[in-house]
Image: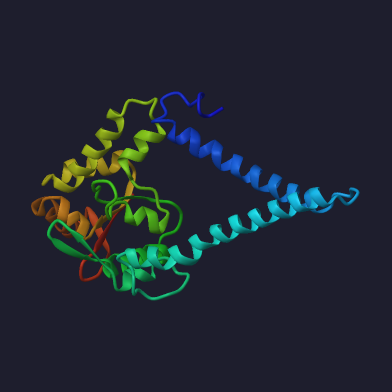
Length: 248
């Protein structure tokens, strides 16, 4: 069905396929398990030709299962080795790789440990779901990292994904949010920044390596001036990250 029927405004059937095929394959898996059991419990008169035919199918099935096992056995290490996180501490904590990893961006290295410490502070000290503002980056980069690892809402996340998920809505709406984030960081006017921050009900402003790499230094400097003037509060700081809080 999904080969010919798609959601209005979908991009190349992608979201339709994702949403429906995931369910279909679950049903196929359940049906396959039931079918295998039924094949093993058939109560028929023994027939040599039928038995040989069945044994052939069982052997083929075993080969297919064995081939299927090659991927998790051989690909896991290759996949891990292919990532820049290879050699990071092992374990189930999805943030541990940041302790040793760096990310190359615009001719420099971002030290992810600084972001990890700041994110851990947010996770431990922020209650509820206050809005944060963080820098936006091109696709498949280190952008939206604070929202991803803390779960806090942000002014704009992965902009192309937002346009995909809301493809029936004018994409200019997303572009205007990108411009608003750019203005918050780049403007040298505290009043202009405050107007945008209040518009989106922002509570925390995140300034780290990403923001310094994508926005103007003169614009970022205003946050320190705003903190000295009592318009913002410096809520957290480490060697590479500052988090400012906007009061009520």
